[in-house]
Every structure is written in C-alpha cells, then in structure tokens.
Amino acid sequence: MDNKSLHKNKRDVDNLVIEEIPSKKKQKSENISTNGNKLIPELDINHMYTNGFELMKKQFNNELIDEKQSDSFLQNNYRDIRQPFQVTQLKQFIQDESMLRLLMKSISNLNLNRLNNDLYSLKQSKDLSKYSEFKPVCQFFQDKVRPFLQNLTGTTLNSNVALTISRYDQNDYLLCHDDQLDGRKIAFILYLVDKEWSSEDGGQLELFRCKSDDHQPLEVVERLTPEWNMFCFFIVQPYTYHQVSEVKTSRFARLSINGWFHSSDVTIIPRNYSFRYNHIRSWINPCYFVDNNIEDIQRYFVDKSEIQLVDFLRTEKYRELSEALRKIDEIGLWKKNYCPVLSRYEYIPRESLLDTVQTSSSKMPMNETTKIVQEALDIFTSEPFFLLLSNLTGVPLHPRMKILDNESEQDETKKDENNSKLGKCRAEIRKWQFGDYSLASDIAPEYSELSALDFQLYLNVKKLNETNEVQTETISKIEAADQSDEEDDEEVTFSDEDSNEEESEEDEDENDEENDEEEEEEDKDSNDSTWRGGGYICYCEKDSSQDLLSIEPCDNSLNLVYRLKGTHRFMKYINSANVHVPFNELSLVYYQPDDETS
Figure 1 (cartoon, rainbow, N blue to C red):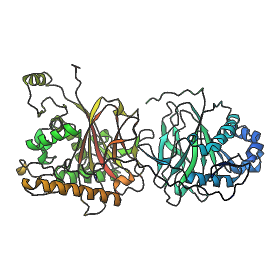
Figure 2: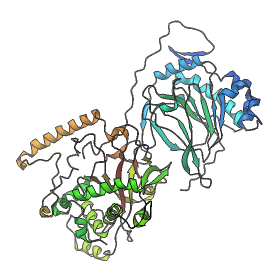
Figure 3: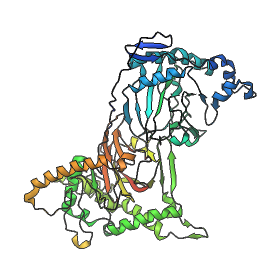
C-alpha cells in the first residue's frame, strides 16, 4: 500500500543542539555546583515546609480538626486531594526560584528522545543519573526529598530513585496507567511549566475513579492543572490510575522532572481482567469474485500477510451503510466502550440491532436504518463469506477453500475429513472520535490468541477536500472493476494509478510509479493528514518500540492483516490535529478452526 494508506511509523529522535552556558567569571557559591562551564544548581526544599512540617504531617494524615489551625503559608500552598485517591500538591516547593531558572538552562541543552507509541507521545531524557552534570539534582531528590516524603507519609523508601525530564509539546499526551511496576512506592513530579500555564492549555494530571472490587478504572473525576515550581506526589496503589491530558497550547511546553521513589516491600496485585453466495455478491465488488483476481490477491497476501482491497463494497451498498451509520447518531444506539487501560470508542451493541428501536412515542419494528447495519454484520459473519475470505487470503477458515498450489491426493483426503470444520469470528461496529484510542495491552483479548485474521473496513472517513483522492501503494491497491454483474470477468490489476498502458510499457510505468510514490511521501510530509493526528492502526511486537505496520483509514477500503501470537494491535490516540473524524469501522477478527491433529 502507498504511504497514504499504509506507512511505517518513524519514531524521530530530536537532535537538539547542545550549547554550553558561557561562564563569564568563576563565582563561588554554596548554592551552585560547577561542572566545566555548565552551571547546575543545588536545590533546597522551601523552608516554610520544613519549618511547618508537623502541622503539614497532621494535615496529610487528615488529623487536623480545622485546616485553619495550619499557618497561612500552608493554607495557601499545601493541598491534599482526597478523591479518587490522595494526591498532595506543594506550591513554591523549591526555596530559591533563581536556582530553578539555572536548572531550566541546563535542561534546554539536553537531548530529549521522542517517545511515541499507543500509550504516550512526548519527549523524555534518560535517567538523570546517566548525566554527570545533573548529579546535584539527583542528590537533592535522594538526600532531601526522599527523607522528607518518608517522614511525611510514614513509608519506608530505599535508595532507588528514578528521575527523568519529560517535555510535552502540542498534541502530546500520556494515557491511563497506574504506575505499578518494579517496586515503585511514591510517584512524583516537579512542574517547570510557564507561570502563565492554565487549564485551557491542557496537560492536566487526570485522576480516575475505579471499581471498588477489582480496581478497574472507570472515568476521570479530578483534573489538576500544572503550576510553576509545584511538587505533586502520591503513594502508588492498585487504584491510582491517572493520565496526562493532551497538551493544547503551542505557546510553551509542559516541562517537568518526574519519577518514582522505590520500596522493598511493594507487592503488585495481579489485575483481573444463512445467506446464499449470491446474496454476498450483491454487497461486494464483483472484481473480488474473479478467479484470476482471487489468485493474485492470495499470492500477495500469503507473501506479505497483509493487503488493502479498495472499493470493497458495491457503491450503492457502501452509500446505504454509510448513511445508516450516520443516522444511528439520531437513534442513539451508540454505546461508549471505555476501559481506560484498554480503549475508548463507541460501538453498537448487537442486541440493539436485533431488538426493537425505541422512539419518543412507542416501540416500532427495526427500521431500514438498523436493518442495513444488521445485514452487513450478517454478511461478514456468514459461511459464504468465510469461504470468500479463505480464498482471498489462504487462511483456512472454510474447508472448501481454494489453495493455489497443486493439491495432492493427501490434501484432498484431509480436506474431506475436515469438511465440517469452519472458522469462528467476532464482530463490532465502531465510531472513532477525538480522544479515542486503543492500547497494546497484555489483557487485551487478542494478546491470548494464537493467530487471527483482522478485518478492518472503514466508512465515513472525511477527506481534506473533495478533489483529494484516496491513493494506495502499488501492490496493495486493487483497481476496482465497474461494479456491474455483466463485468464479473474483468481482472483486477495492481496499479498505482488507473492506466490503459500496454504491457510493453511496464518498465516505464514502474519508473513512473516510483516517482509517484516519492511525490506522495513528500505530499504526506507537507499536508495535514490523519497520521499527524493519530487515528490509524498500528501493529507491533510486545515490548518493541518499532511498528511492524501502520494502516491509515480510507473510505470503503478493506484492510486484511494476519496476526500471530505476540503481535499487538492498537488505534493511535486521536488528538485535536486530526481532520478526518468522526469515522466508522467494521472490525472483525477471524479464527481458524481448532486443529485436532496438532
């Protein structure tokens, strides 16, 4: 597929120019540590917190009968958020703000790596212990902040302190997680944002309410806006789910020093987590029933394990189904699927389609809107479609599938023995909007699957403009035949653009296609397209930062991907830069029948 429809997601590393801070004169100061010509400050906790420690400790433990018993500084600068879990905020945390400004200069000279996957998008440093010039900062958190928090919270912390610098630029985010990992006991963050930062700029620390029984996150109930020189922390628990909302501003970055204090006594609690063939022909582009086309598609899929079939539905069926999905907004059948650690999107419950439609006055039988949607699901979960899908991909979902290689008598015998075995599938109709996503999680259903065939058909994908045509990669674009039954014999051609050139011009065409692909890549870099704002499917191996495959939604294009165990699939978080939402997806997963001989 071309890079408009299918592209490798490149994780760029920002190579910031390191500029040494010029030293005019060597100044001796007990508050400044020198390392070559870089000035790294020695930080200290605001003395108002250390002087009023006992009152603050009572307030932390909720032992003050009246918070007015606290001094005025604590009343104005210290705050405990109690629900959904306790988070403590300490404003004006660093005693001398001029030291913070020196620290900011040092940070500006630091190379930050771009991190980008299903869970987050941001820039981050390595652990600060890896940088010799940041040794005073590490010592501050180790020697001053650690005993301060240990005494305040009553927890026992070891010497393991993880420290990084994080930078969230416009459209960056961090989705729902709980921080339970590797003995983490206290999570903390020291905000270094601009003093004018407000809630409208985004980047808020959002806290989730969780179920009382299994601690699964439900919804955001508290939002904390970053402030300059504010220190926040909380004790890591099974229910401390939180996230960083998308940064909306381009004026300045959400900068912070963040990390975890560790303990040796941390225990991590495990999470619980019949149609006829002719009827199918009335829905699907006739070119996908032509034998030569089926063979070409199967050869490509067996080699690549993925393909995109454009114009998959007949034009009239595509229009009917697209219109029906838009009208369902008015009926109110969409239901939110929101499990913060897995996904957020809307879907249509299957029972809602089979049941009657509720109106303001009375119940009425299923109308044409829901009928066409139900019919589409019935088509793609029917036995005849299993056969067509088997023939297109070579994945054995149906015993009567056509295998391209010469079949031996033994193969035919085995096929007869397994004649009753059919594959299985699960199906869902989804709507994707701003803020939606799905995560590559170990508790996601597909993680436990041995192998599966993913089916993703997109509808109602908004284009940038009316003349912006969908483009696809040379091999993966299937040039659709005229959608009429009289032309069922027309062959599918693998072409980057519609062309009537003779075979003698193949070499010239190939050169043209390569040039076209280069131009498309340049267009992709210059135009505002879906991939810039998320909203595309990524495939990756577990614990890998490299995408195996990325698929950008295209109207009426079917994407088929054969996924092995250990391969994750996720929808990249859809941020406010995306110009193609909302759009719909028919998402199905097909499984091979159980192989009793293995």
